[in-house]
Length: 334
Image 1 (cartoon, rainbow, N blue to C red):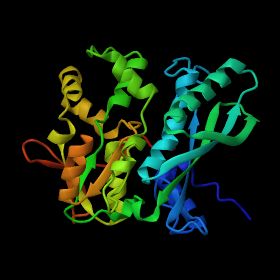
Image 2: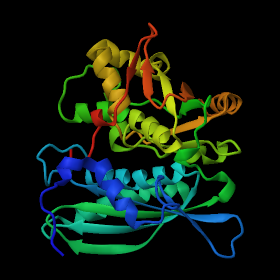
Image 3: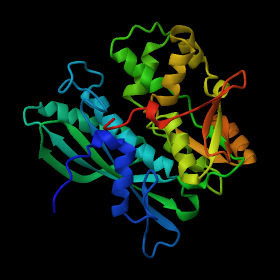
């Protein structure tokens, strides 16, 4: 079969590629942060499987591909594990185990690999999650492909396609911290009062498995914000066939973000908050009474409302609206 060499990945982007690849998969399994699989003979129990690939020079930098080091090997391992645990949390699942596919140059120091695995183990330990296997291959570039396995009751599964008109949109923590931490690591002079906290947010993000037991019943619609706050809301709205109005004042209403605004200005801070990514929080959509109770218990933040317009809009303090787009955040192959 001849291969059409005309169309390149950079022409269709990450979302375009995913849309093409999804036709090879069962339609009722894909589309969320993980695949939910029935366990034969296990009643309402479901298996959740998710895979993330993190590549040196793209998701972290230990100094092999890029001379600017933003992550130690230990932090690179932690971030790789956190990305997968966050996907399980985004499905409402508890984590059980992971496997690791390690691609690595032969000249890399053995101690680096041990430190990467120690970082993974340290991220997993609070949740009693084990490394149960994987593979190691020689490669020109360091990368970690982790498959995480979790479990969830069928009534507790979080889906992206369940947002309904009038639902409140809730974020479980502030956004933009990881991106600002990266800017500091890249050498940008931002005179923030607690630089170490911003850097830690980038190097050692916390997956929100701590909130799984607090999720309301029935489960909300939602996903994690690993690709950015705006991305998560847009993806949920697309999957659910709805729109949304986000409240700028609620999104930015935190002392750390207000300090950031004073230093870099409103528009730059807002861009990092909406599109920075890698904060690994949860974005959830639920009825007003559930949202009020959930926010009270977990100190999460209501930031908007689901509408029937089909558009995702940001409302500023003056009531002015503007559209949010996937194109402003990070996209592979862009």
